Amino acid sequence: MPSHLSADRPAQPPRRGTVDALISQTRRLRGDMDAVRRDAAADGTDAEGRWQRALYDLALHQLNDLDEHLAQLRDGPDVPAADADDADAPAEPVAARPRGSLLSRVGSAEWNLLTDEASWSGELYEILGRDPSTPALTLDELPSLVLEEDRPQLTAMVTDCLIDARRIDGEFRIELPDGVVRTVHMMGEPVLDDDGSTASMWAVLRDVSELRRSQRAVSDTRDSLERRRHIARAEHRIAVELQEAVLPPWRGALRLPHRGPETLDVAARYLPCSSTALIGGDWYDALELPGGDSLLSVGDLTGHGVTVTSGMATLIGAVRGMAMAGTEPGQLMACLNQLLDAAGQPALGSAVCCRYRPATRTLVWAQAGHPAPLLFRDGTGRVLPTPDGVLLGATSGAVYGQAEVTLRPGDLLLLHTDGLVPGGMAAVQRLLDLAPRFAEARTARDGVRAVVEEFGEGEREDDACVLVARVLA
Image (cartoon, rainbow, N blue to C red; front, side, top):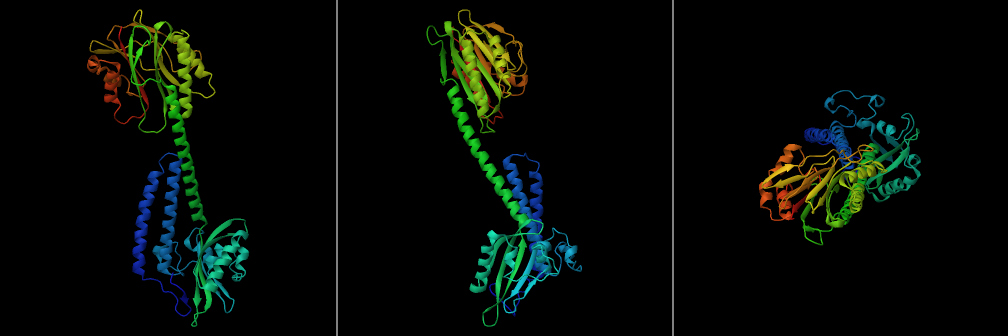
C-alpha cells in the first residue's frame, strides 16, 4: 500500500497484463497444491496426518484468497470476483453474490474528518453484519461493534493513524446480531490534504474468521503432534529401560550349568524393528534350574510400547518361577495361557519353552502358536516335530502338548521369534540352509553371528529374537 495517500491523487490499479500473469502463477500453484493435498488425504488418521492436512487446507485457503484478491485488483472494485474469468459481465447486486465469495469478505471504508461523514462499500456492511440501508458508522461509533476486550486495540490503531499518520494493520473481533463472532483484519492509511494534514482515513477490512480457524486448527494439530511425539519418546525410553532390566543380564556367551560340568553353550540376540522406535514384546531367556537342568525359552507378546514390555516382563517372571518350581513345559504353557486370559487387558502371545536334561541329553519342549526349534546336526538341519499348542490368551482352558528329542554333543539348537524370518516354511528353509555355516561354528556366539549376518542387517518390519544353544555334553 503506498504511503500517505494524497486526497487529490488516488492510487491507480496496476496494468492488467501484469496481474493476469500473477493470477496464472497462483492458479498453477493452487492446482499443484490441491493435487498434493488429495494424495495426502489417503494417509492415516494419526496426529501427524491431521496436522499435515490442516496445513494443506490452510495453504489452499490462502492461495484461493490470493487468487481472488488479484482478480479484484485487476478488475477493480465494481466487478464481482466470484468469476474472475468473466470480468466483462455486469456487476451483481451485493445481495445476489454468494456468501463465500471474496466480495462478501473484503470491504472498504473512508472516514472524512472534516465533515465527519463515513462511506462504506456494500461488502463492508455484510462483513460487519449491518443493514445496508442504515448510515455507515463514524469512527466514534465503530467500537460499539467490537468485543469489549478488543476495543483498546481498535482505538490505538485509529489514533496512531489520525494523530501520527501511521498505517493501520491489525485485527479485532465483532459479534454479529445472531451471536456469531467474526474476526476482521483492518489495513488503512491517512489521506492527506494539500497542507499535509490528515483529511480522512481510508481502510480495507477483511473477514479473516475462516483463515484464523484454519490457523488454529494447524496450531492445535501441531501441538497435539508434539505432545504425542513427547509421549512416544518417553514411552520408548521407559520400554528400553524395562526391557534391559528384564532380559537376561548376560551378554554374548553363557555356559550352563554354572556349577559342575558345562553341558550347554548359549548365545542370544535381540533385533529391534527398523520401521518404528517402539520396543516390541519379543524376549529370550536361558536359566540354570535346580538339579543341573537348563531352561531355554523365547516368546513374543503382540504389540509395541510400555504396556507390552511390561506384559513381557510378567511372562518372563512367570516362566522362570514355574520352571524353577519344576513345572514341565506343557503345563507351564497352560499356566501362561491362563495368566494372559485372566489379565485385565486382553493380549495375545506366542512362546516356546525347552527343558534340557544333561543326564540323558533329553530336550523336553512345548510351544504356544510359535515357530518350532530347529536342530542342526552333521551339516544338516530340520524342524522338530511340533506338539499341539494355540496362541497364549487365544482361548480359555487350552491344553498344550509336549515333545522330547535326544540330543548329541555338537548338536546346535536354534530358537527364534517369527519376526526373524516372516513368510512361513519358505522363510524357515532359509534358516535351514545355514546348516553348513553352523557346522563350522565353534561356539553358540558364532551361530548367532551367522544368523544376524543373514537376517539382521537389512530393514526389519518387526522385532525379533534368536537364541542358539550348542550341546557340549
